[in-house]
Amino acid sequence: MKLSLPRALLFLLAISGSALASNSVVNLSHYDEMRPDFVRMREQGIVGVIHEASYPRYVRDARYAARQDAAVGAGLLWGAYHFADATNPLRQADHFLQVVESTWERARPGSRPGEVLLVLDFEKNGHYPGGTMRVDQAVQFIERIHERTGKYPGLYSGEYRIRDVLNSSKVTSAQKNVFTKCWLWVANYHYQPRIVLPWSNWRMWQYTGDGVGDLPRATHPKSIANIKNAERNMFRGSASEVRAFWEAKGWTPGDE
Image 1: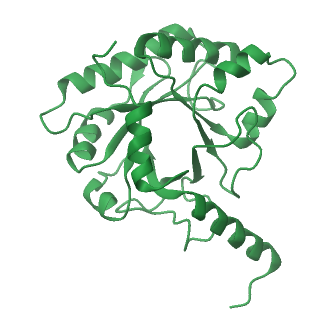
Image 2: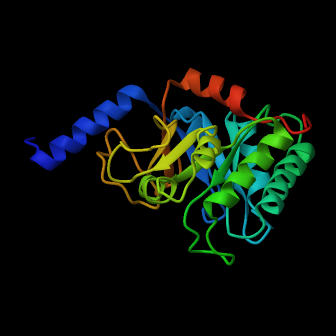
């Protein structure tokens, strides 16, 4: 089939992205109301799941614990993210770690993850009370996580927000330095992210969510297992490298 120029360019971008990355991570939250089939996810090439653990104001995601048990029991790696707001960042970090740690401690035998990959969701807050987290607050959150766990969290945000917020002249070099200690998880549903300064590159790329995404479905599918409109992510590296990364960057609760 003959491709138009725009479609051809998208296809070439898809190929270049796939050559560098494995389509191996799914993220979930309480908004995903179905019961995910984690066994089928693993069979279809998913290696890790990152789930919302907490969100404004100081709420525990009600689906987090049961899905941790099911995903780890199915042989998948496990991660947790906190959806941030503009309230006290230290209290947010402590609440997030309390949710992750208490869930880990209560997990059934065989469903306790070896390491939990931690992430700060630094996107614009349009769903919850509390406003949008500022750069200085994010720095405090990041440093608190590192202080308590010895690990820097990943940072999730959209490519355009990274460009507009983190590369503002108001952001200091010291603040940028703290951000770049985090590994980057970037969202762009239209093409492979290109400009992610102050990072040199992304570690994970969310290319679709809620059925939105312009890239060819042959290389960048929108569904996985029994989830029709999944939030799917490319990891920069192979499936075996995902596991090595998780082990290196993840936190084992109880190691504070």
